[in-house]
Length: 467
Image (cartoon, rainbow, N blue to C red; front, side):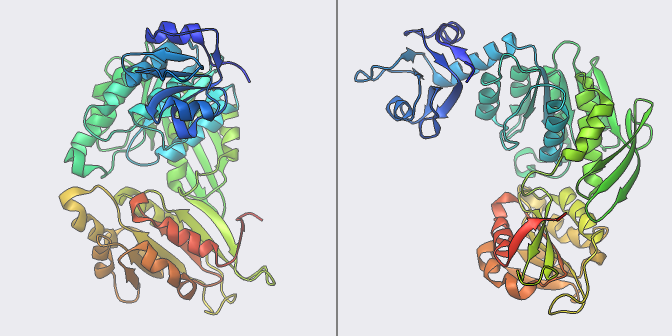
């Protein structure tokens, strides 16, 4: 495996003291997760455990006397991680794309990875990586020969994104959309928009800011970009504009215009929101030099990350391939905007009749609590009953104390079961879904609606939707 860091480079970057003459193929900050060949930075766990797992060297504040392996003494291991991140950024010629926003981040990042990975060596980490440690570790592990890199930048408190974007110095920074999330920490949508727009503060010289031109906070985005180059995506009149979208059972066909050129492409799952995310991904990828024609072709290979709108066919009876239901797994994130979008997705799906215990196939939504909505939580959960497309759903089951406000607001013919927790609800799914149904499971990660997804999968035998 190609060396990522040489000992003398690590010592030079961090100002540490210790032996050189070693090479590391990776970096770990958790002793238990250390892999053979890693440089261990002692953030979690101790060097003894890391060396037992195969570390070649360790950055520590105090050396352990009984260890013969290389230990580099630094004043602060977190600061040393940041130092390595800066050094990796300085030595790399990779074009970096950073992504933030309230909705669509995971899907957009995955799309950018598909596009750039088809046109060069693209460095990325799982989309859940987004805080200080995650971003610094992602940057410190940037291979010297990478052509591109993609990172998600998130915020737990005001100021987080500004700090991380200055560390990263992206060549393209993308804000997807602004929606109600983290209101408990930020207080208002405007404050959330300001935090997300801070991603433009770290743009590398000649860098490009990318944002949704139709978002109600687009003016804030444009102001934050300042004199830097910018691209807007959205409806007509934007640099990348959505002209037409056609949803099929297992495909989205998109007609778009990018900077005056028309493009026709498809995505392997249905969803108007996925089409819009694709525009943002195309704008950001082409801003760092990707060929747009190749990019649109490669988007056909994209699939949503697990728990972000993936579709599966669940075979309920292995002796009868026709006895199936369609599961839409969107169980790892929920806010008012993304829930409304998921209602549109299930409304476009077609149940199958005369294949189950119930003659008519149904659209069934199982919805968990949304997270971090602060004092407005009860109202926002209840207002989901007014979403467009909700009338097309035959039955809506609700899980959690906050989503109870939606359950109470539903008309009786749509109101399904309510449960305090996903653990309480999951054992009953066999009585609530049937062959021919299309079943959406949606909720914030903290609502644990993934337990319901798992219970539905265990009803039968999973296979990809297209088979």
